[in-house]
Image: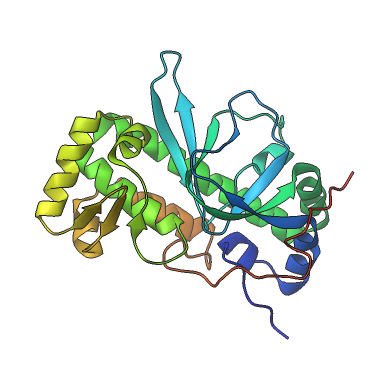
Length: 259
């Protein structure tokens, strides 16, 4: 019988056989907002496949200023590249929006990649897409006005969730930190978008009301990153709501760490 696909598009893209092999070494962890999964220079011991949580790769400058390099949600994974590299984080990895994620020991993931060529190829292509997103963010933060960057960021963050409701649960202050912008500038940009009927603001939330119109206000970076994901990960649509979390027997228990 065909399994129900998990609410993570990378895991959902695996064959039933490969998925059944890797899911035995995972368990679902509920990630709280603001949790730092690992900081720059720290050892990476687990990888996370978000299934509702949205996670940010944040660069912290020596003076304490911060900016987001990439947003990761149900389209991707955090920590997978580290199972083949130095196993130390190069940036702060923090939970932006709370929710569940499939967690796997980094050694178990490394062994799974070695044993499953399809999984290894998928994660290599995802890493390339993630790098493309990070590179585009650098240019975007340098060259584009706050309002265009904000529209792009709201769309991207809504895409990375898995409820399909186009709601971003973050304060204006947190959004300003992610954009590397002043809070006043972000507040003004949000007010302008709300006046035009593109978004609605609530206490700690921003809801996308008119997605097509917001896409026209976003800088070109949104479409560029989308095209990279579509090219590198065909069939892993990073927009829209995927299926619910697959509750395999034992998946909520402790993960099994492979030597």
